[in-house]
Amino acid sequence: MELSRRTLLIGGLSSTGLLLTGCGTEEGGGKDGYKLVSEGKLTFAMSGQYRPFNFYESAGKLAGFDVEIGNALAKWLDLTPNPVTGPFDSLVAGLAAKRYDLIIGSMSATEARKKAVDFTDNYYESGAQLFVKKGSPIKSAADLKNATVGVTLGTTFEELAKKQSGVKDVKTYNSDNQALVELGNGRVDAVITTKLVGLYQIKQTKLAVEAVGPVLAPDPAAIASRKDNSDLTKKVNEFLKKIKSDGEYAKISQKWFGEDISKS
Image (cartoon, one colour):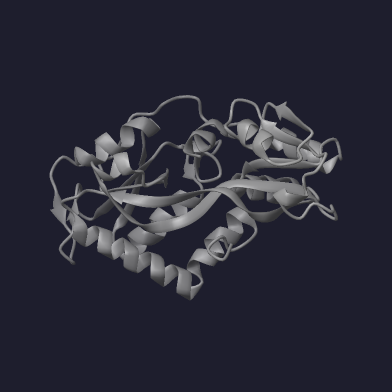
């Protein structure tokens, strides 16, 4: 479902592909044996074009869920956070070439990518999710008999919606936000979109819409590291367990999605 994630960019994103910045050329070392491209800094990469996970605010500052996870990791490692951006399809090659230490950019750990880099445990799970108006009798995809389902044009969700048993019609919209607004207005019976993007839009717009049923097509995200930097991979996994147990992850998640996504 990663194609869906890449095509579901929310309005207002930067349309300019930015070159990677702040990357060191000589490796330094962490106190636990891991390697760093710049001494004293944790350099982590993302596209900068995937709201609400990583995007540029109007002031030109990187923001989002991924950015805050990376900043918290750097603080825990007693390093200065150094988030950088580049085209999504170039990030794995850049990591392997030692331009940065990690990719914290909502990346799926595909088999092809695993040949080039290592991945940590998943730091969140998303995927195709069914949304309905609050109070709807539809509680899962099994209840879509004679339903009209809204999806975003150009995503794989259109094909997925047509495959759901009982669906009468599939309507396409220019954005997931538009589809969810139409759902809130009762013009469609359900919407299928990326779970966490949908939750973010609901939080922003206060729509009387909710997610129902299990994820229709799971799409977890992990943090990528270099194959020669297994000590850093281990430290990141320790960090992820820590922030999920001490409430820090929940705090970041609530800010962006209105719920603790580690529990969903």
